[in-house]
Image (cartoon, rainbow, N blue to C red; front, side):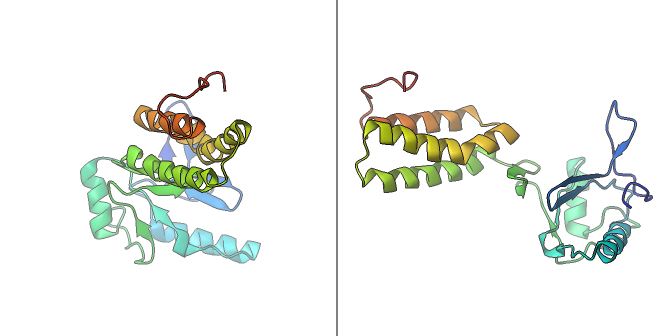
Length: 193
């Protein structure tokens, strides 16, 4: 329905087709052009839900304005994609600059401080390491704990959106201190671990 609609979506250089929708499991990402109608999108989704006997969770809808800063600010303030468009419902979140939105495990947005988002993950990893430290694990146990938590809590997100160098340095420091039981001079080099 979306591909056959009048919605313009995004034109991607080098692609013959417009980018209008991406589906992954139960997540749907729709790309609307500034001239598109949010009301038309809602009508299409309502028709699809009736046909599929599904329910679209409008409470989870997030809008990330794309374009020049003035346009993005205008969308947030007016809750409209354009001057002629209908208002976006109040229960739909529109991300202002600096606000990150989680999509498929990655955080995206305009003017988002990636380092601050990653430091939240580092704090969670540090908390887990502190919990396990109470059990006084062996060096092999420490290696497994590092892999389980540091790797497990960072691997997908790093692949999806990358990790800033300062955050990478923070994780290396966390790992080194944990392996060395808090000492700044580990007995085994991290590369050898």
